Length: 141
View (tube, helix red, strand yellow):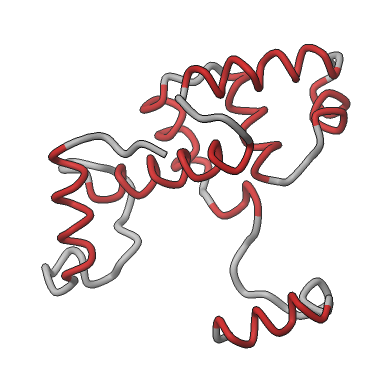
């Protein structure tokens, strides 16, 4: 599906009924990827569960129900996650995790496959720029 088509479907509200081929929310990453992200960002098990809930666009109340804790506990975890990852809100949290995932896919010795199929062959200039950025400094949102 083209970006223009996706935008059109999203604008008209029929995106939810359209058959999307890529997974959304936390399902966009494999269990292995989530494990690597958690290890790299030094997230506890509970923090990872909360981040995955944020990726699924769950409210703090819904995340609390899913984890059998109080909404206040989830709120506290979120605030501490924001501080730990140097972000200020949910959107920046998601972007920070996405940046970390991309950095992990191009890191030397990574067990995660590269996002770009051309990366391994060296035929992808945008990936080369990302690799340079990863090697020179950590991503910051």
